[in-house]
Image 1 (cartoon, rainbow, N blue to C red):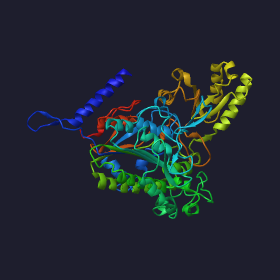
Image 2: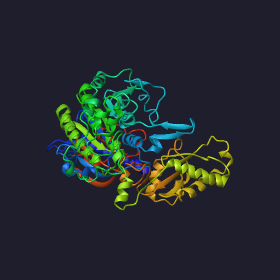
Image 3: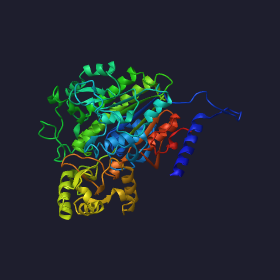
Image 4: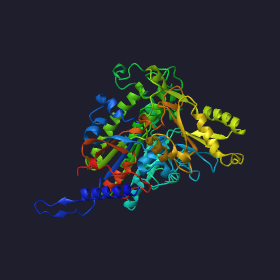
Length: 554
């Protein structure tokens, strides 16, 4: 571990020297600039549920100004992985921006069981704050459950809080966690009202640019467009997959086929926009408004805009990766990105901003798609797992309901139950592991207190350990076979250690970034370390990453 920190420090020094020094022509002397060179604006874009292969799967149909521009003008770390499991939205956004892992930053899932409260806890819940921008409880949120700082926090500290930080996402967790503990503002979408909101953790009232946008009721306007394919449907890669039994239907639809009639939901179902590409368009439109209204990138103090496009995740969950809906969503996102980059060029200036794109996780193929193509896959049910396990444990230990719940691939027991304390808990966990190994779709199970002693492959040991937080995790971790997950017969999900969930895109573009690619292995946690080195600021408090030195012009 000590060697890793020494290496990290050396790399940061090399970064600082590389960025700051300039040779005076013919003099042999080194001239140092009067000020630290930094971009005017950093823009981070997390595309929720974007598998790495989506960079290339639809490449031939992407415009020159969107994903193609990223790939050809930017620097792509082609082998970037998530270093922990399970792979969920809150964990991914947190680990990108903290440069840390759930074992340290504390965000072990979207939800987890709190043994003190004896109930499930949502990652960004905070009962001490109230909603700003609506009368619902959608804004009773803050970053208080995140235990370490973010790169956005460190930028705020480094600039004495003069550099602005804005977080934007349809999902509260996609905005709150990246924006950190100290942002200028974090905003997310209230599906009950169709408005963008925040909480009293950040401010007492919405800024005029957010409330003004809310008055436009853009969700209803997007609904009027319905959702049809952007191009003739028979030209799509997945053109034979528009009516599959393993795709989920919208409420009121007889089949999951184009065109999707969104006008039905105008004025009465604002949440539906999440499951359409219009949600991404709305998010990036608001991001452009934020840049103008907050004057991001207008002075010599670096600002940070953290954006997360969530509709890719909702569409993926409902229809699966091999649907026309997923393909059309990425083709539309490509067009949105082209417009967004053009806006950044015009307002901040090409070469003045640093942009990166990544993902919080990938996704499995839908089990129905896998079966259709004679590939192994399947689904399980956490509810059924716990019911069967408790029946088995009762037969072994003569006690009912020993297991409390299953979540985040973990079995959790109620340690405050006095009856449980009368049992040999090591024996209970051993019996649990024995039972789980008999179930369809289960590859293995391990006592979380003894992961290092298990016979699991090294990569699984490391990812489970990185995802384990002693105060928030369960007691037994189970590993499903590839393409098995807790879910329904339609759509897909994510959460496993497998490459389809853990191999994510990572492309930097813009300020001080050279065009190119690397096939060296990097991790999600290296993003914050790279930004810290490039910006000459401290890495986040729980960072375990290392800078990607290959991407700069130096």
